[in-house]
Length: 117
Length: 115
Image (cartoon, rainbow over all chains, first blue to last red; front, top):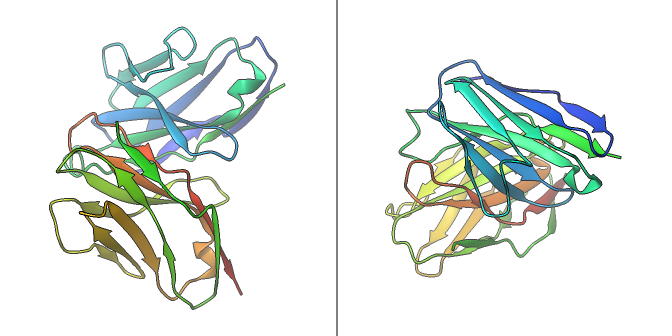
């Protein structure tokens, strides 16, 4: 099975700054997604990271706040910009493989716990 | 829009016993996928089991099985012979059967397995 890693695993940041989170997969994937999990809550999809084109954002999330890159089939970054305490969450990337694309299975990275003070 | 509801915020079970977690969903789609994910304290999301709506047979993965009632839009998870390592938050999730489709998650059920 593939290994999905995220960096950093956790960070404490000051308000007004930005943090870039990396997601790396050890094999090629068709789809990459970014989710947010606010404290004590469920997961909400932020955007789909498209390789070679702009990410597709869900309602309530904008590119200026959450810029996303996906330069190749194994790597993506999510930046949380101009952070406020409300951005304190766990951020998770998930991936879909070509072998599971038609069955809907997504596999998650270990998450990045962000605390904004 | 699809919604997923888990009405049990917390549940507990004794080790080796059986527990059932409930999930209901609302959709106008006829074909879709349903999932149960597990999130232990390590926060790693782990896929437990998957069900395709067009399949009448309930999915089973070792000690985990589902009771899928399409007409009632119900998708419960049964854990048999509960183990301490099953302690986790369990999320029910829905997906339309299209590439690039999002997972819609329920609120989660915190399951504690007691020794």
